[in-house]
Image 1 (cartoon, rainbow, N blue to C red):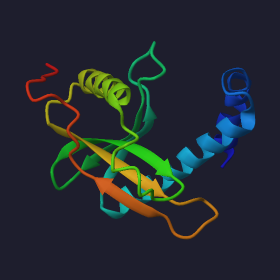
Image 2 (cartoon, rainbow, N blue to C red):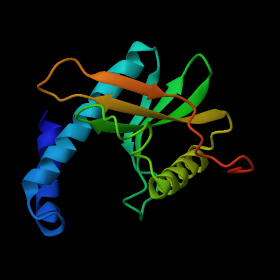
Image 3 (cartoon, rainbow, N blue to C red):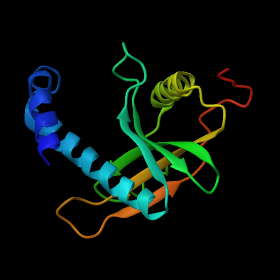
Image 4 (cartoon, rainbow, N blue to C red):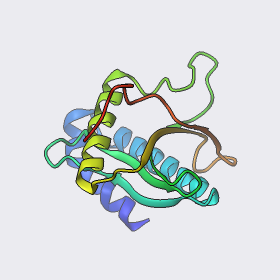
Length: 158
């Protein structure tokens, strides 16, 4: 919990400038952090090994971030997991509505950089986990969408 508070304190200065006040950003960061905690518990329950969390493989680009990098022992591959946290299900929004074109481009760049830096030559894929609920509410609902098409068919990183 102390790391979350330190993270929130570090964001307060930039939050006042960009979003009109620290409370909206702090609540959003805390909700996203809670969603990632739920996702990590879910993946650990599946027997996956968590390699990294909030990994930034690109040194100069702050948008280049991977929420969770995990290893799936059944498929023997690296899985890049993007976590989206929502308060509740919406009848108007479909699955994956939070991963737009710009986000896909950033995730592609981040995952390609991670693969090159680690010199990974094995299997890899991209998953999206949508977590519905609130920290103080009932048990969260997790929607794990596996093997999302992020990488173009002809794309090779080596």
